[in-house]
Image 1 (cartoon, rainbow, N blue to C red):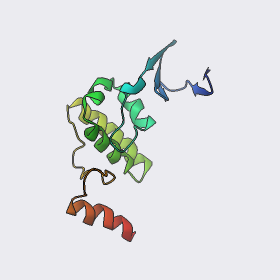
Image 2 (tube, rainbow, N blue to C red):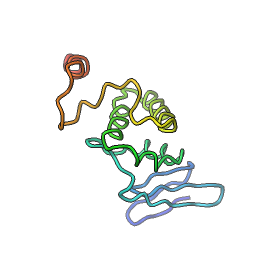
Image 3 (cartoon, rainbow, N blue to C red):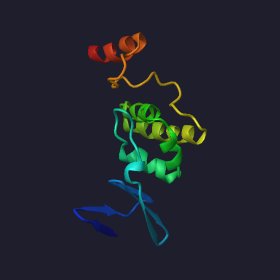
Image 4 (cartoon, rainbow, N blue to C red):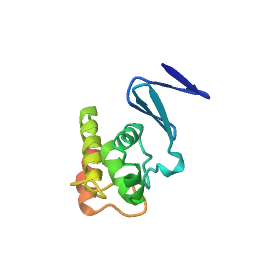
Length: 136
């Protein structure tokens, strides 16, 4: 089934679809639409990717996500987007939702976002994350 929304459309084949700031949920024969509006926030530097937004919606973690600070949301997003392979990204999204369910405000074992411009990277970030990438 295809639903048209202005200039955009959504294919209903999976249980959850994110579309702009709308989240659609297909449950048996019922379609629910949630307008996430400006409340479904990204981070300081990074925008919220659709696959993470879907996972947050599937686990009903919208309020938990919004309760995080912008820096906390940014750390989760950066950690997920730093994955080099799709399978790693999928694992990190699953782990992020688990950590959110556990009440964690930052991803475990993550050195921090190197894209922030409001602070200098730590020496460790500079040596390991930034300079190492330059040498590749």
